[in-house]
Length: 353
Ligand SMILES: C=CC1=C(C)c2cc3[nH]c(cc4nc(cc5[nH]c(cc1n2)c(C)c5CCC(=O)O)C(CCC(=O)O)=C4C)c(C)c3C=C
Ligand SMILES: [Fe+2]
Ligand SMILES: [Fe+2]
Image (tube, rainbow, N blue to C red):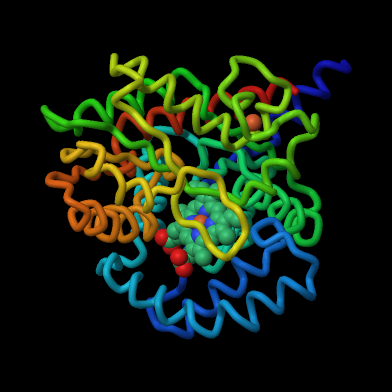
């Protein structure tokens, strides 16, 4: 009798998937970019100063000049369908929907379509249990953590009766590493002097702040095999992806480097910086470079403009000869299979609870 009741209640639960990415401005108009940057940078998980200082910095300084500059950059990558980041996330959704038997929606942490919008669409289809997938391989306070915080806020306020289960960062999952390695292998040129892994940076302070063990010193501990801080150490997780991928590709360590891009403001961000490295490589004899950006699963402003256009110019200007940008996983079928596996794993786990 007791088991029957539990099973009956389980059958009544309807599951759905919400794919979450960072988000882009509504358009490339400066006012829309300003609105987007305002929401993004006023998030205390992104600029983690007390509210007064954050608003002084963001609304008093950054929003005076950056929106115009960023709008011009967005114009160079925008497509007829819209922002590459959102278009690729939609493509993942479209492909995933065809191979799973539950509804799939997307939601962006900032701007539209919002997380609330995505949850509502699922709820309108009768969904009561959501598997939410933050599309970031590595954990960071400014990505995974803020997504979960926002989704929980929306759930408590607007959808208190639904359940959300979160997919954890997947940087060390074999299926993801195989997928990334195969994708890179296909796109690597025949000859190259070095392969650069350029990850989005974060301020060093963020790493210390989110380390529950307070053991990470942003030194060699991040590359050690085991340390209790690794679960929340973005730096470690970037190193781990690199290490596992180059092992799969059979590349010697000497041919590979890790750098961090897209820094903002005057804080100390993780080093070495991508732009400085690109300027120095030609002097070190590296003229033919391949570069990949595995903090991003979808190409976006930070890869298409900052790396494949600006980065290329920096490298060539400094004496580099060949610059090969390796695109992100985007909507490659092998990546869709990984998304499916991670989602179904969580759905089944959910079902067993
Ligand atoms: C991949 C993980 C990301 C981390 C970690 C991250 C941290 C982080 N970012 C900023 C500031 C900006 N990032 C911007 C764009 C942007 N950032 C990510 C991802 C991560 N950010 C993506 C995917 C994008 C592209 C969005 C798109 O529409 O294509 C921008 C906006 C663009 C610009 O003006 O340069 C800013 C600003 C901080 C401060 C931060 C950690 C503290
Ligand atoms: Fe670390
Ligand atoms: Fe960013």
